[in-house]
Length: 312
Image 1 (tube, rainbow, N blue to C red):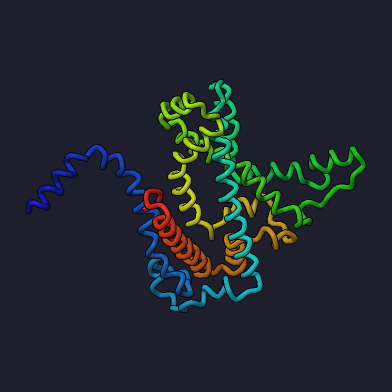
Image 2: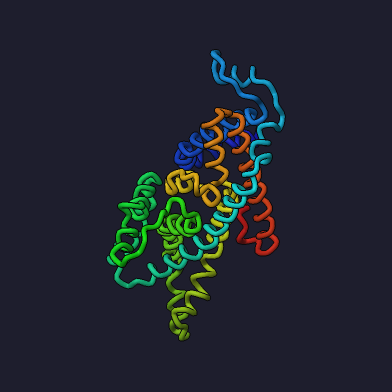
């Protein structure tokens, strides 16, 4: 009884904070936890029923791991896995370096009004949808009207069929992703830099530390926990690809599939062609399980190396 009384006492004491957390809690409950019941579709041959969604699940027959064979039994399995992993590894490493670098540069700008202008300009691309970005890229790479081919024609260069030349697209994909995401990520690190105690920098300046020494010995160590946490979270989604980036920007060009096809786009095309919902559910479950495992393993490694910087 004492425990129950203490429980309700704690609730009453923290009721304001609990009410503030209630909307986010309900969002995760309805959109993240309750839908987990649908994971069973990954192991069934799902067929629609007139009696509703749950009746469809119950009536659908079990097929075991047959839905997972779609990802692993085709010739494209290696290509889509390779592309998904390599792109995401590059995005995590280069994105982290550029975001931290831009945050430090913005923090060092003495003219704060000018710094806000730069910050807004870097932050704006994040709010553009991939559809808009895809048309934006097309305005540069179009064969007959693209800006790059138009400029090249002024110097006598032959126009390039950008949407059939796959050699260029790993660089284009990476460049477009960094252009869209680095500004947003840098704002997160910039907020962390603004929270660093200014007396640390003042003491370093009195001791004669250069700006680079201040960054290396104060800024980067103070950012290390945040960098570790965000990297661990990014590793958890390493088997997920940004569908809009890999589908809208290359304009679903079949000639580019070997360098732009990832798990998400492959599943989408397969679902569109076959209508097998069980297959797409199996792919999502596979990505989630691998991502969860990677987060646990990565966090365990970080705890062994530096317990204070671990995610949990």
